Amino acid sequence: MHASTVARGLTCLLPALSQNPHDPYSLMTRQELPVPDKNLDVVFPQEEGNYLLDEDGLSTLPSAASTVVRWEEGLIPQACAEISQDPTSVGDNCSLEKVEVYNVTYADCSEEPWVFCRCPDAADNLQDVVTHFGQIPVLARDFVRHVVLGADFTTPEGIVPGAIAIIEDGDIVMYGENSNIVLFLHETGHLIDQRYQPEGSDRSYAENEEFRNIADNDTCVVDEYAKNSYSELYAQVLPVLAYEWNIGAINELEGVADDTCMSGVKEAITGQVAPYLVHQAENAALAPPVLLWSD
Ligand SMILES: [Zn+2]
Image (cartoon, rainbow, N blue to C red; front, side, top):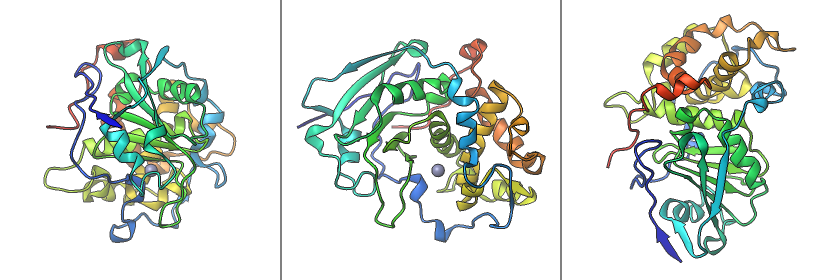
């Protein structure tokens, strides 16, 4: 099977193929890194976590109109070919020969399509995923290079992720039937966190001292999942901000506590993601993100 490289233009996304090894963010070696205090209070109830924001609002955000065109059979982007062979991304259940590849062009970024790759046993309905991804405000969507749909997956460590972000490349793998806007916002949060990686550090912004200190001064986090690592803590805040800016205050939702106890991280993350997360038309006039990847 041929591998074809795909580069999105500068207008809407970023130059493509990086040679960096895959590093599924959600699976990074957490043991080596400091983690948030497990005893912190949580704002969202234990069961649902911030998925409550999907059912109660974010799922109703408008999605950019889209056109989906399948690639000629036998062609696959290099990155999708690599992901389909990567035991830490999809395991053995994504046959390279059977990956379906689609150009997905959204009306709010008509210059260049996003490329979606679908493994043969992926359970999510492609059009649903296209719709969920199109609900992400275009400037935040712009951090993402490829979207890969995979079957349910258990990592060699026994973790069953809903999705992963491959932060070096900007690719998101969505597993099983997990696709929704909250998960896309979370994974996009990892990509934005990586964009703010401090100079000289090999970790994202959230895994560095400045953010850890801010988080440690708060007395709560979004939900239990946010306690897994400082980068998960960061990514869990994005759906909260998207909800507040596009829909309303979260503490009006049933079962959700007052979140002033995490105002430190909210303020820090707001400064980084605000330009990318608002659905207003004037957003189109904002400058595009600084390039995430250099050649
Ligand atoms: Zn994550």
